Image (cartoon, rainbow, N blue to C red; front, top):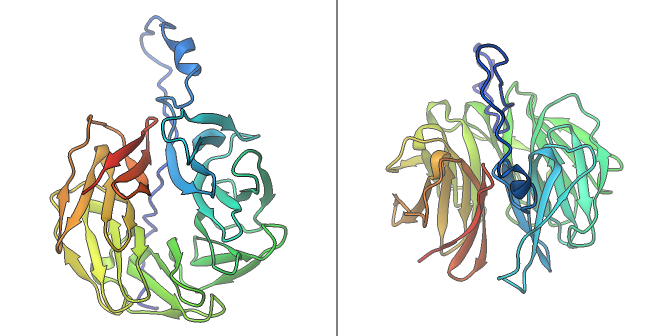
Length: 322
């Protein structure tokens, strides 16, 4: 048994949970006041947003029930526009390819793509029985998706055909990032880390992260420097390409679902509206303009001092950063 394989069941974390309605007991009167007004809004309280990306012309947010929200990049004051993709797929991951194609992954094992700045979308099924959790577009324009049983799917033709490979570990892969044309990292369950130095042709398993850490998100600045976030407010940091990791203190115990990092700013996003910013080698909580009980999951830098943030209950707002 490898260091990644355990006798206990998988503890995969799903962010899109079904709404459970109790049909028994007393029934309250149905209140329709404001429902029609809410339905006219481009962003609604029922929206569960999971990912952000920016094409050459457009900011894009995607989420459950096929929701795609767009706004022109050059007109910051414009309102968001709303569309719903056919079949209302649960869109859980989004990326921009070097050729300006937007690609999105649905929980129904579909690749959705747009080549006109999110105005229209097409889809192809992804031929695997594994659950897929994340996708990215590599510098060579190939689309990659990762998921259960350490599965990696790759397509060279926007999802018309796929090659499937596995690290042969019974573990869920949650993140995949290319840091340059040849170097890529995946992270997953039981602290799994694997690295490729040949554009994904082969993968080398590294030593697991300490404590069976379950990474919910990763942010690689380069082939050496990265952060991963997870449950209980935990953030780990590596400066040697994933060979070793150390804990960086945070002031929260909430799950941290998303990370954003560039050379100047590093942010962590989590449950109940948590936003953390890295200062030195520790993380401090950012005060938001208004409190939100929803999870936050994705961030995108839009200006030198502005970051766009998306999450549950229609959370989609800009945050000033220092």
